[in-house]
Amino acid sequence: MSKAVHAKNLNIYYGSFLAVEGVDIEIKPKTVTALIGPSGCGKSTFLRSINRMHEVIPGARVEGSLTLDGKELYGPGVDPVGVRRQIGMVFQRPNPFPTMSIYENVIAGQKLNNKRAGKKATDELVERSLRGANLWNEVKDRLDKPGSGLSGGQQQRLCIARAIAVQPDVLLMDEPCSALDPISTLAIEDLINELKTDYTIVIVTHNMQQAARVSDFTGFFNIEGTGKPGHLVEMDETKTIFSQPKQKATEDYVSGRFG
Amino acid sequence: MSAPTTTPTTVTPSTRPVRQLGDRIFAGSATGAGVLILIVLAGVAVFLIAQAIPAFTASPEELPGGRNLAVYIGPLVFGTLLSALIALVIATPLAVCVALFITHYAPRRLAQGLGYVVDLLAAVPSIVYGLWGVAVLAPASLPFMTWLQDYLGWIPLFAGPVSATGRTMLVVGVTLAVMILPIITAVSREVFLQTPKLHEEAALALGATRWEMIRMAVLPFGRSGIISGAMLGLGRALGETMAVAIILSGSGIITFNLISSSNPSSIAANIALQFPDSTGVAVNTLIASGLVLFVITLLVNSIARWIINRRREFSGAN
Image 1 (cartoon, rainbow over the protein chains, first blue to last red):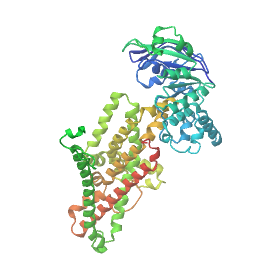
Image 2: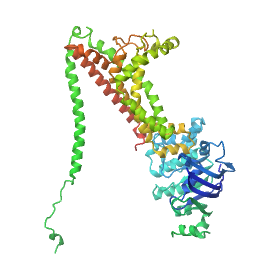
Image 3: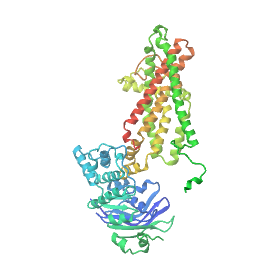
Image 4: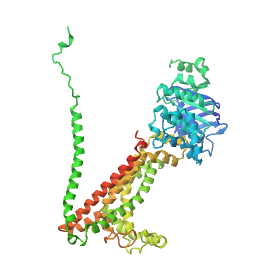
C-alpha cells in the first residue's frame, strides 16, 4: 500500500511569493517522518504541497519535482483530485462533516470513489477503519449519531478513520494533536505507531517531544527572516537530529536556544 | 487591630449581582423590541378576526357571489397557493445555482458584480414586474405554451386550450419566480459563504471534485439557509398583489390547467381589485380572505421552522 515520496529541488510559490525554496527530501515507505521548525517556516506549506492541497489558495504553484514512487505528482495531465485520493490528510482541527453520522463520515471517501459496495462490505469497511483508528469500541453503539457530538480527540480519530478508509498510499498529518488534551494526544501517538506498519506517514508538529516519540526521521525547516523563503535545513534519523545534528541551527532549535 | 477599619464606609454585600447601566438599557430595549413585534402581530390578528366575523356570520345571500364563504374564498386560496408553488419550484433551484456560481465558481470580480445585480433585482418594484409579465412575458410565452399543449397536453397541467392573450397561471408563476429569485439567492449566498473552510478542505483532501465538495460540505451546511430563503420568497409570492392583479383576470374556479384563459385569482390580488367597489359585508368578506392568507403564511413559516429543526443535531451548530 505505502509508497515513497521524493522531492527534488522543490520551490513552492503563492503567486509571485516564494514560500519554500529548494526542498530535497526522501520519505521512505512505512516510516513516520516528522517535520519541525518555527511558525511560518513553510513546513505546513510543504506538507500540503504533497497532496496538492495548497492549491486551494488561488495562485499557488510549484517548481521542481515531487514524485510518489517515481510518478510525478505535478506532471502534465495529473489531476489534483486523483492525487488527493492517493494521499490522505488529517488537519490541525478535527473536521468531521457535521451533517453526517459517524458511519457516513467514515465512508465519505469511498462514496467519492463511486465504489458500490454491498451493505455487508461497507459495514466491514467502517468497522475495520474505526478499529484502525482505535475508535471502534467507543462509538460502535452510536454509529448513526453525528460525528460532531464526539469529543475533540474522538473527532480527530474519526478523521483518521475517514482518511484510512480509502486506503491511501501516504497519510499526511498537519499538527494533528495541537487542539487536543494530553490523553487524546497519547491516543493519537499510539495510533501513529500502529499505522506505520501499513502507511507512509508525514506529520508536522510543533511539539519536539512528540516528534522524538513518534517519528523515525525528522526534517528541520527554518526561515532566515520574514519575507524570506523557508527551506529544509537538515533531514536525518530522528535520534541523530535530537542528539548530534550536523547543523548549528538545528541544534539550537531542538535544544531550545534560538538565534 | 484590624486593618479594614481604616476604610470609612463598609460595603454590605449585596445579594443581587451588580449590573451596569448600559447593560440594563440594552436588555430593556431588546426585550421591548421583542415584545413590540408580538403586540403588532397580535394587533393585526385581532383586527382581522374582528372584522372578519360579520362575514362568517352573514347568510350566504349577503355575500359577494351569493353563495357561502368557503365557495368564495376556496378558489382564491387555491390560486394563491398554486401561483406561489410554481414560483417556488422554478426559483429555488435556480437561486441555489446562482448563489453557488457566485460563491464557488465565478472569478472574484465577476462574482461581486453579479452579487450587486442580483441585489438590484430585489429593489425593482413589483408593479414593474407585473407590467413586464403582461407586456413582454405573456405574448412571448405563447409559442412555448402552445408547444406544451401539443406535446405535453396529456398532463392535466398543460391541457389547454392555450389562452390567446398569454395571461395565464404559468406566466404569473414565472413572473413571481423572477421576483423571489433575488431574495432566495441573497440568503443562500450569505450562508454558502459561511461554510467553514475546515469542512471544505476535509472534502477536498478526500479527493472530492469541486462539485462533490459542494455536495458534501456546502449544501448540507447551507440547507437551513436555503429553506429560510425559500420561505422568505414564498412569503413574498403568497402576498404578492400587483403582479398577479395585472396579469390574471380571475374567474373563481379551481383548476390545475396552467395555460388556459380561465384561472383562479389570488387572495391579495382579489382584495386589491375588489376593495374600492365593496361596501358592508363584502368588505368583511375580503378581510376574511385576508385572515386566511395570514393563517397560511403563519403555517408555511411554522412548517419551515419544523423542517429546519428536525435535524438540528446534524446542523453543524454544535
